[in-house]
Image: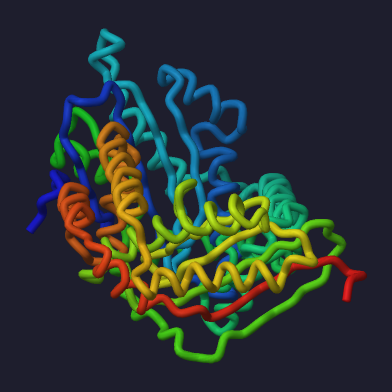
Length: 426
């Protein structure tokens, strides 16, 4: 049963999701292309959208490409590459003003699909492959982005802790790939990878605005110059149980401040009946400024410059991030473990419950005012196979009790402690 308001269709093995509405003055368009995270393909898939955004058959020069967006009343275009669970997702976004606000005979949704379809399926090429200059330039772009992670020690520690914790799983891979792969990617190999990706990726196309499913299906049929044979579905992944001994990893680099990260595993994922309780668990533990980690580790004990937690419901992993003085390592680990025990013992205050519910409530309600947030929320359904509207999730959160959070806490188990410290200390 579809209760989200999105109407579903299919053309050329693209799953199409349209939310017809007059609430917004723009058309919000998102195209998600997802493939399994794999070591031999992750870097080429990551590089592909960087090259696609440089030019198309009709607008082969980058300046022409950008001018075309200006000719569509300053339409927005962008992309992102990230991971959800063990999948690598490339997301293209377009934001175009509704025709009725510009007058005349403009058909901006039509022109947007002509543009997006050409970006995806008719890129600028030479001699049967991507332009060499574009591939070379964007290889450098990706290389610099990956290097910037190394230079940002907070991000570096977060990535390294995941690498250590998931060293035998695809989730260890960064969605932008690996620097060592970049020199070996040339226009021929990248073009071959692109063609395979275009055929095999799970494609979900979303539109929110004053349109219809039938109109969008016709636009895909007209402007997406590809014949896909099959449409692969996302497969729900079973979370890995965190019942092994806690592993501690210490890495030394030239840093002044220590980065203490912890990884926890849980069997509760996005489609689980306890998902709302897991959201509450993360919120009370470290999701917000009132949470236990921030109050007890940073404020009361003055042990950390920052202390927070994140929960990936698609993977069944929660992570704790903190920045500490290096000599405070032992004490910081002890205090953080105490907070985990407090959660398992159900030592949760009424204020922590009410403030966390208020924060989640606000996030879910704010989402209703953003077309792209509505799209992002619905895309979680495609990834998880779980049909649950924001209203239903909010109702579940409102019903969560302290005992529900305690029961969820029992399913979060510490897996890995990662500490990034200086090179000279003992």
